[in-house]
Amino acid sequence: MKQYINPKSAQLTSFADRSSTTKQPHTNQKGFWLALAVRFGYIFLFTYTGYSKLITIDTFIAGIRKVPFFGQFAELIGWGIPVLELALALGMVIQNEKIRLISFRISVLIMGIFTLYLAWMISFVEHKLCHCGGVIESLGWPQHLLFNFVWLILGIWSIRKNNSLIK
Image (cartoon, rainbow, N blue to C red; front, top):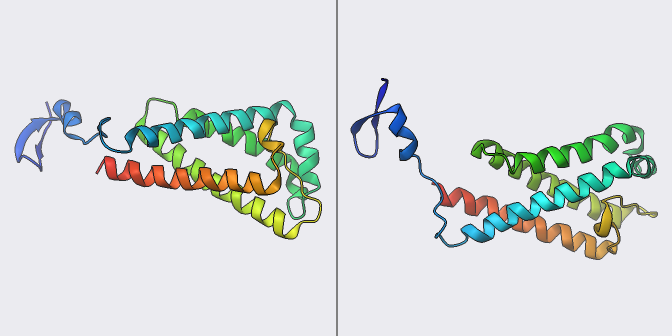
């Protein structure tokens, strides 16, 4: 059996025992449950919007064709965004902690990109188009920007909180 020296206790242990030496977040630590709720919020949000876009894919792609600078990539963006959203949602629920964290971080990054896109649309595009899907699509532009901004801030906070919990 392979062995290594545990740097914290300077004791020789087997690799089978090593998993118990890695620090995991404790569910009683302050903010753990809110950070978890934020991740589940992202899972719901990305599943909902990804599915909604896929069931109306023709409309979604037609709308992207009308967006300045992005229209020429309508097919790629039209299929890519909902598939990415669903893949990230799936990545955030699977058992592998590393994949969950990477998926969540990419989801927050994507939310940041979506938020910048909305700000750009509000500021510079005369005929604004939104194809986010479902109820979110029915929000006004300022409400939609605020919605995305709040989720972006919650996501950033949750990433920072999670990083501090497992250190």
